[in-house]
Structure formats: structure tokens, C-alpha cells
Length: 398
Ligand code: AMP
Image (cartoon, rainbow, N blue to C red; front, side, top):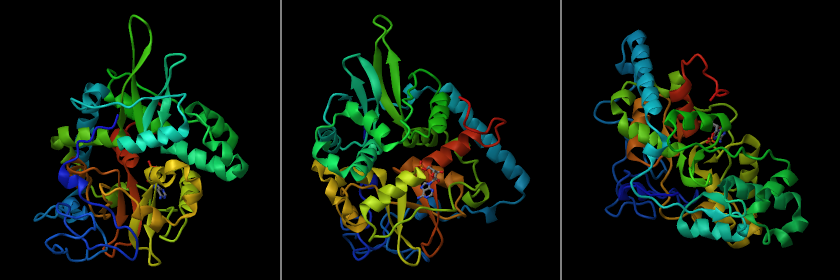
């Protein structure tokens, strides 16, 4: 499933292509494909005169009232409010089902397991989607989810067995499990959830398995056959929370720094001159879905995401993986949603505001000079919202 509920404004912020062609910073409403505003650059906020396109910090620090910790007095009531907000969201997730997250109308592209991997790649690109459920038509059963991780596995296979490249075009989706075995990665758990089960359960399952999306699978009462209803993502769940729980998310006034939200140590980064293949190896090594692209002064220029791998190998061009990140990012689709940043003093309620308004998949934490400090993934936010302060605040249980 890949429904697109973005507003035109959300679609209008392509990321900077290369270091040399870095566009001016602008407001998120009127950026052209080249990253410049048609009526001239918009005024820049002090301290944010950065070679950046999407300027989400302006969302994150709503004006004129700056919501930083300095506004808050005693920490006791703040803690209480924060917990009240978290409890409200958790209760909401327990009374809503995964089915509730689905939009009124959507399409679902399901791929037959027998399809050639090469063809599946073209179908994803043609449909503008980055994943699809797989169907085993022999056994009439759900057969897992095709995601960019599968293509990364194919690339690793090609690196480990370069002689096999001649056969790579003949691989079918059903051979993905063999590829996993050959390169020695653990097969991803084929998790799914019933659409009518509480949404809380889908969230717990996603955190437990580190899945960024989860298929909703129902069973026909008469035939006993499985039916894939749709797929929900962490992004869609957080958007659903943000849109329906403003009364609770507005209570989450603690800043990112105090919550320790995200990752700040041992960050995987690359430069515009790194090869795409090097970045893919980093993603595999760290088990992450995005690598910030920085300059020599640790300033954030862009972000290479796992989904950026898909266009790189379009048409089976695996040898193009030696291209640089700068080259690969300059081929990014114009509707690329941009990069979202925040700083450590931004509060969680403001992050939820941004999620409510925009298509955010992660936030890069920067200082006032746009130097990289950390990264906040949607999984970090989901984990905090679900588990913070819970007795069983690990992700073992369901
Ligand atoms: P993700 O793959 O985006 O779901 O992130 C999984 C975990 O890895 C989260 O806790 C992130 O904060 C962390 N993470 C994401 N990107 C990076 C990175 N480039 N370097 C180090 N950790 C990261």
C-alpha cells in the first residue's frame, strides 16, 4: 500500500543535490525543484543561514512563542504532564485498531513471489512505492514484505559473489531467502498483525522486531485463506497519533536533550564523495535506514536513505553503485520530501506538530551551525511514547 496524503506544500522540497549545488534555505511552502524560491530567497532565520532546503526548524520552534525548556518552571509538574500525555496516547493506541489507521481510499500493490527481482524493482519505481507485500500463489499465502533491505541484500550478494552477477537478473522474489542465507544475514521475521487487533499491539510488534512497517493480514472465515489488507508504517502510525491526540501531545513539553531521544554516539556518517556502496555497507553494519552526509566540518549536507538505493540499481545497474553519494542524490526524484532537522532544545510536542503537518521519516539533530549532533528515528519516538516509564519498558514482550 502506498497512499499519498501529502499536501502540495509537503511535496515541494527536494533536498540539496550536491555540495557544490547547495540551494538556499527557504520556508517549506514555496521551494522550486532547484531549491530556490521563485520570488527570490526567503528571509533566513538568524543562525540558520544554511545550505539546506526544508527548514523544519521553523516548524519545530513555532513563532512567536518559543517553546524551549526556559519556559518551564518546576520540573515536577512538567514530569507529571509528560506522563499524562504519554498515558493519553497509550490509551488511544489501545482502543484504536490498525484498521483505523488506513485512509478511506488506498491502493495496495501485492507482488507474486514468482516475479523476477528485476521486474519487482521496476514495478516499485513505476508505482512510486518503496515496499510491497509478497504473495505465494502456489499456497495462497502471504509471503512477507519486499523492502529496500531486500535490495540491499541482493547488492551484498553481488559484492560477495561477483561471478554470480550474470545470474542476478534471473533471481525471483522467492530466492530472496536463499540470498539471505548465502550472505549470512538472519532472515527478517515475517511479522504481520490482524487489522482489527489494537494498534498498540502492532506498535509493540514493530518495536520488538525493529520492523519499520507491518502488513495487516486477515483470514477468510470460510476458506481459511489469508488476505493482505494493507501495510502500516511507523510514519503513518505517528501521523495518526499526532493528528488525533493534540490534547495529549501538547503535554509532551520535555526537550529532546532531556529525554535523550535518538542516537548521539557512534553515528554512521558519510561524505558526498563516499561511494554508494560504502554507504550501503554502513547501513548494513549499523542496521540503520539512513546515513547523514556531512562535510569536513561535520555540517549536515544531506541524508542518504535506504530507499535511495532503489533508483541506483534501476534496470539492474549494479555496477553503478561505485558512483558517489553526490551523484546518486542528484538523481533523486523531484518530489523528495526534504530533510527535517531539530536541535536538542526542541521539545517533543513541537516534533509532533511537525509530524502532524509534514511527511517526516526522521529528524537530524543539529546545532546552530548545522553541525551534526544526532539522529532521531521514528522508531526512537515510537519507543519512547510506548515504553517510557512502563514497568516492562523493554521490547521483549508483546
Ligand atoms: P532506523 O534505522 O532509522 O529505524 O534507526 C534505528 C536506530 O538506529 C535508532 O535508534 C536510531 O536513532 C539509530 N540510527 C539511525 N541512523 C543512525 C546513524 N546514521 N548512525 C547511528 N545510529 C543511527
